[in-house]
Length: 581
Image (cartoon, rainbow, N blue to C red; front, side, top):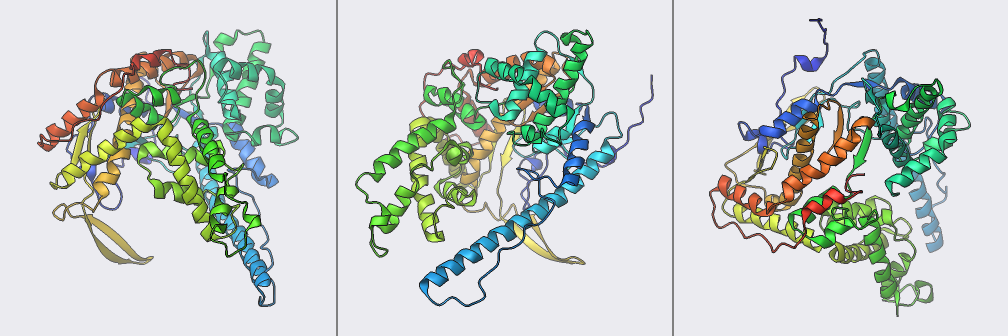
């Protein structure tokens, strides 16, 4: 047997498979053996995936830094000059207004420079790590589970769950034959990374076929005249990696080889359609929300973010009726603020405006959280002052919540149910514990913590220690329940899909919570098992099973009854083209 000399810090660094949460709460880590069955099997199998640094992409990154290139997600090499501030002290109201604008503009540039500085520092660490790892033919990433059962790689900076750049820098270490359908999935993945992921699969394949010249031009000269062709893509670095891969394929075929024998090394990734709502719609057996997120097929690719935006726009149109335009009102008019807000959203509500609110709703975000998101994400920046911005965010939050009720009322009922169960146990000073279908036991126990300040050479450090005798943090058990339950079920789905792929003999996989990937030649298997394992979880009264597991662990029989379920036949997902796509 050949001796393999493995190196790496994680061979000797002993770590726990379930990581304790921050701020002192152990949660699931306090259970002796919380991970069993398929969940443990999946954890071990995911860590066996063989990765390598994509040297083609790494070289382009280095060249972009030399050129001082700047595009979304890639920091500028140079700081922007700060705009000047008027020398004279403002006196008149108009001067004060202009002075405030100048200060705001200066602050925005300062914040952008600070953000770019942080990104440059992070980028340099990432590239140094990638450069060091590029000398090895294969690298492996040890993982851990958080207290909900979600898998995360332990290494920082360069890892399998990073942004577009990190994904572009990593490839599978060993290629696998495309087989009969691998070329199709390569082309679909190329189009998806470029931004065509809203198209049907066949249309994505056709898009790549039509743009082969552009793809090959990029591979030949990525940092010259062709740079804009990939740098403005939805996922620029994955797009670049696919350009190189497809060029290799074209050269392979050009030499007279069969495309089926080409060895593919770039992962094809399939993404869920708002994973949280997919799981909640199946739990609640709700056809309305299931259709919105491609659990129940409708014959086209549904997009719940667009659906919510389309429901919000008519409401804003209706709200503007009878409200005079703010330009016709005096500054002291009591209607001025309301008119400014309502008219200010005209033509400004888009898919991207509501996307984060919709995406985070299955994880328990409340109205205040949506308001904060709208402000922090810059969607209210077209309003003049902070007061108006927050009023505008508050108004649009109410519109979005109303639109959500049209599309995902049943999933929201499920979230309220999880909160009610947690509150019921909280009142008895009992933690919320449940089992997932993959063999993972989750413990949610937000105990109060004691803090202790420790002096170090770098200053004072606060250490939090869990105090299990002090009760739970007020309200935290209830607010944490909804996102934690949903995350535990998407983690179970991932684990069960991973094990099903393992039993098919598939070794290399690229899994990130609600994004499943593998070699192009194995995608048909991945699609099949992603759907079948979802059915395996939800083709029963899953919500009642969850309730019974809570009763088992808590010893409390009077856990609130589950809400009324709908009539969704979950097996319909087996025919859904866009469930994960």
